[in-house]
Length: 132
Image 1 (cartoon, rainbow, N blue to C red):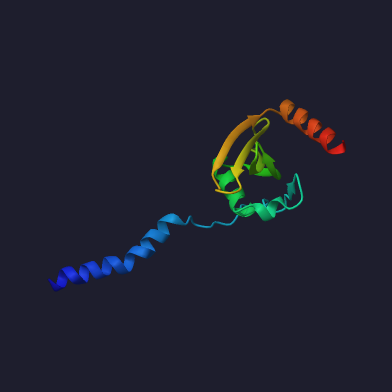
Image 2 (image 1 turned 90 degrees about the horizontal axis):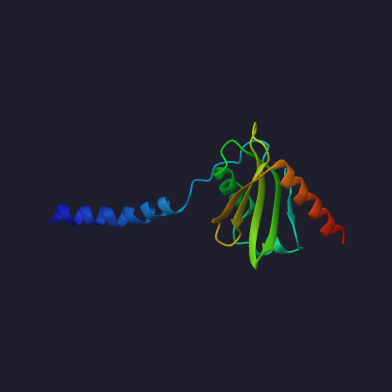
């Protein structure tokens, strides 16, 4: 009986730590060269509304595109949802991977490949929109 009680006491004592270690991902530093790409905001104050940090969202996006590096980072409202959007270039591959991360939950919403031509067209349209 004492052995069983000691066993149960040990499980209860270890359970919170075991649960915590499974629910919190390890925080690895960003790869070299990732921090300097500034985060742009479509509207002032969006970053204050985000529940997920830019750094955590960058890690999530980079995990989806192994070997890639962020060349453009933005925070925007798209269809009423606050999202981090990262353009990630992979050496030796054409175009970029655009990864959208929910700024509230940290979940990846989409991963899309954009060719160099479609990327240039999107950048041109964005420049026109901003100058209007």
